[in-house]
Length: 483
Ligand SMILES: *Cc1c(COP(=O)(O)O)cnc(C)c1O
Image 1 (spheres, rainbow, N blue to C red):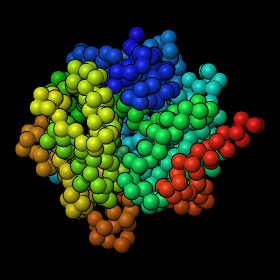
Image 2 (cartoon, protein in one colour):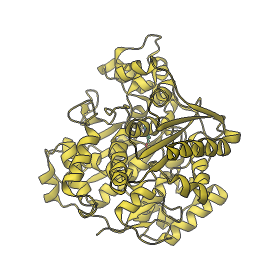
Image 3 (cartoon, protein in one colour):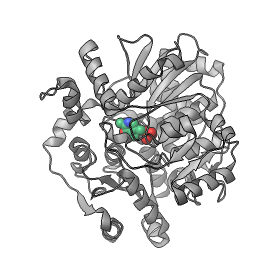
């Protein structure tokens, strides 16, 4: 049976269910499986042609013990989770006309039209399944750069064993994203808009860490998180790497490249793990905007926190890509002492420079790029003008990065990840296309519907957020428990 351990080495190994329900490991580290399953070429060939959900069943079965989730239970959870996706392929592909062997993987056809639906659909339903079975209640707290919040809220809404508190940096996400959270009327969804966050959503991660650190509070409300610190997100996200590979290759075993717009590194951590498991990927492109933390990590071997910059791709305006520490576990001979040393050093000083050997080991098979705002807007315009295809600003960052690294990547097939529907970013689209009228491709019925609903939201200032939030959360908890 696969056990789950902290990447920082503290605490005891736990089973899958505990790892999922805890979110963080007991020493504040991130859970990692003690071994990774190995995928052979034969297995990959057998999976070709499977639907996304059927493939997910195969891959997740390698991580989840049947005694914890049975075959039929896993099938049910997956069917329920992906039923609200709007396309029958779940994740469709668009081959670009203006670039050879280049495909856009559209990860935004879930109910809140971003890539976050892909991981959270499964994770929230899985958490709920465990809670129903144990007859327990959990309080989820998540911070969002605009997309985790809506997906968590959507999948939590109406589930009686769960409450979700969703913290967002007010003014730093779009009105469309905000309304996806605030217009749900369900009593167990609590969006919290926090004004004046100096470092954007990274600040809200710190707030959550403080709530966790208050043991009385954490135990009373039974806090957990479905941010990408939760192993369940990363595990589920390995599936679309396998799925994408199987959709575009001619021969099983041929190597391809993938370009991924990256913020907290939850998506690419899953990609890295998929490759460790045996998926034939030549290069992963770490596509950053001008908040280039990951670009520094992968090009210079330096993990450092700098000032946040507002960009058109706001969902990846992130300073601290926490899942990098999880990935490093696999590329640093599972040396938890080293990870703990680096994480502590980063917390204390805001910067870590890796030794040459470590840098070479983790950066092997990765290329990185930091796209400017202008490059991002230009590529949206170019693809819309030349082939009538509208990318969102995050997908655009992935294409910019891949275009600029083309010579280094080589001629292998390339998948660029498009992680949000453009209708979430109408002002950016107008700016990119230099128009005041939004094209139809930049609209979506769910966004239009949300415009016509009342908002229900808690608001507070960053200066008081911890006390304000604890007060609101505890009051709500006493109310539901009093029922
Ligand atoms: C969250 C998000 C990303 C980045 O994913 P990470 O796992 O944080 O690297 C990219 N694009 C969009 C639209 C997102 O919402």
